Length: 309
Image (tube, rainbow, N blue to C red; front, side):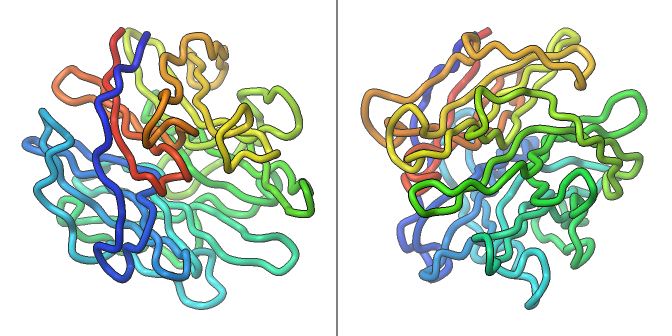
């Protein structure tokens, strides 16, 4: 398998007071005539809110609509999403779109907490209302530090989610860095989740973090691409910066990792030459497109690649 890079789609550059920088975690919905790509952008204080653009199905670099305001706002003081909201995944259920998002809150003893909320759209993903002020993937005995970034499939009469659970906070060069790995949960209604605590992809060492699963199913096999990074100097170009990993499974629970088949890496130069991260994959008229971030965790914008099996 190989991903053929097609180029940059969008970069945030002061288009609005809430869009000063970053276009992070591109997460798409495919409609009949266009693709809607949600992402989070940062204001002057570095706090994130989600927005979307609409692009041409045949050429996603052709943007014909930029939404005029964020689709969700910060939570009130003390709630899990008071300091930021970042897209994770969408599902369509009973003619409604469920928007799973990472909610951020700043903390005193560690830099942040992040858990996963749900917002629901009844108007074809134009506007969303938060289902609750509380997160859907929340603090529990298996997820004591964080629970975020699910990728969700429906199989055998219920929903399965792969998401990142917080493992530790590690002090590196005087700064606390968060590590997190993939576990899975199941649900009957896509709101209330039964967590398992089982780590499904093992890290190379205790400094590794895995996040943002991108999942497709083809011929009875699930294929999973994901972000991986180290904890030392990962914000810059180098071995520990974000890259992609790959694994596959036939049951969505037991995964075989094989990064040799990932099929995509950083470019020699340009917007994704230092890191690639936060993939999301959609099927568009028989083609598989991956939207992803490059340098600076989305500061350089996001682009896309097309899968060649």
